[in-house]
Amino acid sequence: MLNRRGFSVAVLGSASLAFPALALQARPERTRVTIAVAGKASIYHLPLTVAEQRGYFRAEGLDVDIMDCTGASRALQAMATGTADVVSGAYEQTISQQLRGQSLQAFVLQGRTPQIAIGVSTRNLPNYQGMVDLRGKKIGVSAPGAATNMAVSMMLGRAGLSPDEVSFIGVGTSAGALASVRSGQIDAISNMDPVMTQLEQQGELRIISDTRTLQGSLAVFGGPMPAACLLAPQEFVAKNPLVCQSLANGVVLALRWLRSAGHADLLKTVPESHFLGDRALYLASFIKAREAIALDGLIPSEGPDTALRVLTRCDPTLRADKVELARTYTNEFARRAKDRYGV
View 1 (cartoon, rainbow, N blue to C red):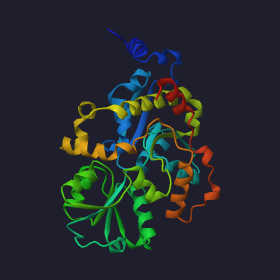
View 2: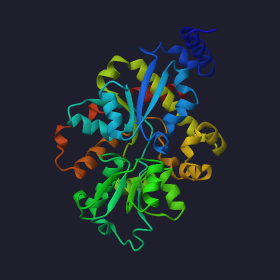
View 3: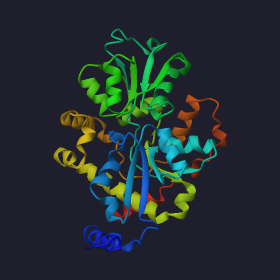
View 4: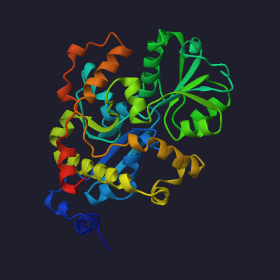
């Protein structure tokens, strides 16, 4: 019978055979790591799920616990209180939190676009003509203040509407979001897949804005908009560089796998609970969002500028000159993982 230490050695030994480069990396500063995430079942966080399910984190010597939270703010709160060490969330959170006095750093990219689509209910707004028709309406978002909220606020602003002219309602990113549209509780929704594809294919939603593709994201944000990342307090990154390297390695390996994974492979890897009861629709969602998944874990050099511009446009009270973008991210870990695994 193996004890915990013996088990760790055995895992690392087998990992060295599967991934020879792992033998070159020292043992992480700690073995247990908790990652907080909002909406783990969404395709937005698919690389994290793949890294977990395929054992890439275990092969790196980490025992990772993924804590699924009800919203992005709850995930950040879990990290702030020490319940979680790392957050899997939107890159722009590093900017908004810096303005609140908390220094966070993104260290590996999972998504090249926010994968957010905005749609109107075909039941409540069958004669929808444009964004101005949303004045006075109820719009579902994953959670108030989340990236889904930011995306629709930006689209409203372009149409000359203030976010105060609509009502935002938190509906989550899974069954609750589906139920809110189907019951008629909301008139429009800003959300992610597989929710949006399911509603669209079943004729319950008309998509009016889409960032699930690179072209669609560019049209909405005007530049590359980094999305899902692993991010942590700068102090944690500085004190635990080998942990961050191991996490980045796991995500980059997941990105490499996703680039060539077949549909059958994906269905075997992703937990059944993520399919929302329909495997075919999940695959359709994956196909639609596939190009949004990061290729190598690197945050594009223009991405932070785009995110800052979007944030200040959504909230004019934010002071762009108070933000030090260079402190919000590092590509050191992702670049090392990319070089190590030939991604």
